[in-house]
Length: 93
Image 1 (cartoon, rainbow, N blue to C red):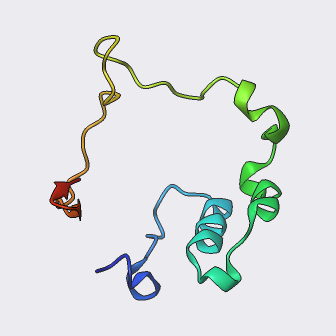
Image 2: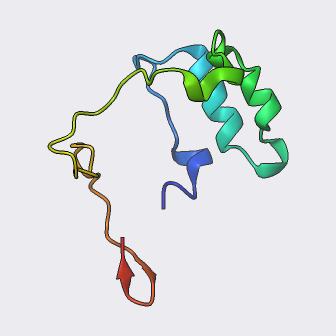
Image 3: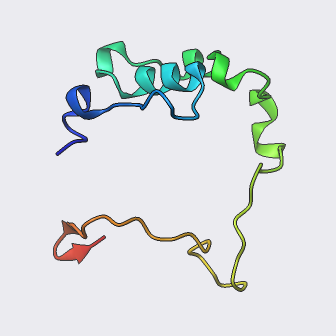
């Protein structure tokens, strides 16, 4: 599995439209647990510069997915093409 072998399989293409700060944050989050950043370090990371952490819950969402109707829980996003794996006792994701 590529996820388990991220050290050898994760590659961000040079032409990807992603900032150096984004790449740095991703690397600090997917590393070994002993090297991973904690909450305090995350809140101070340059990628989050300007984010008001103390009022985060009161800020409007930058994007709200459209709903088909009031009971729509899918958020109208396409489902990822991942294999359905059993979770427990025959329950499938």
